[in-house]
Length: 186
Image (tube, rainbow, N blue to C red):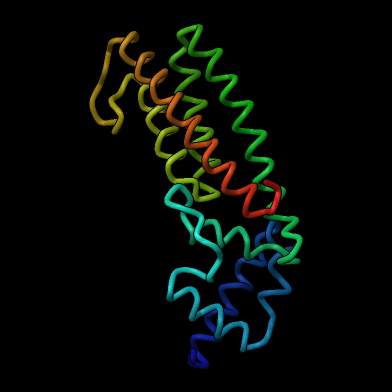
C-alpha cells in the first residue's frame, strides 16, 4: 500500500500532466481521482506495467500504457485509438515518400523522413520501428547505423536504406497487426 506522501506525489504528477494543454482534457479527471486510484497507480508504476495484455517485444509496454492512461473511457479508448490510427496513416504516407526518395537517390530527404518517423514511433513505444528509422536517418546523413562513423559512398548508403526499409516495413506490419488486435479491430 502506498504511503500518504506517495499518494500526494502521484496526484501532483497527474495534475502536472493535466496542466499540459493537449493532455488537460484527458488527464484532469484522473489526476483528481481518490487516493485508492493513486495507490493503484503507484504500485503499478513501480511494477512497470498495469497488467495490459502482452504487446510483444516490438512495443514498449510502459510507453504505450502512458498513452492509454489518457483515455477517458477505457472501453472505447477513443483518444489512444486516434493517436495509433493517425500513426498508421502517417507511417504509410512516409513509407511512400521514402520509396520515392530512394528512387531519386535523395539521401537528405531519406534522413529527414527517417527522423520524422523515428519520433512518431518512439512516442508510441514502437521500439523496433524507431530503431530502424533511426538507421535510415543515419544512413541518409552519410553515417553508419550508429551515426558515429562517416560513410561517404552514396551507393552504400542507398543500399543500406533500401535493405532497412524492407525490414522496417515488416516491423511496422507486425505492430500494426498487434495494435489492431489490441483495439479489437483485427
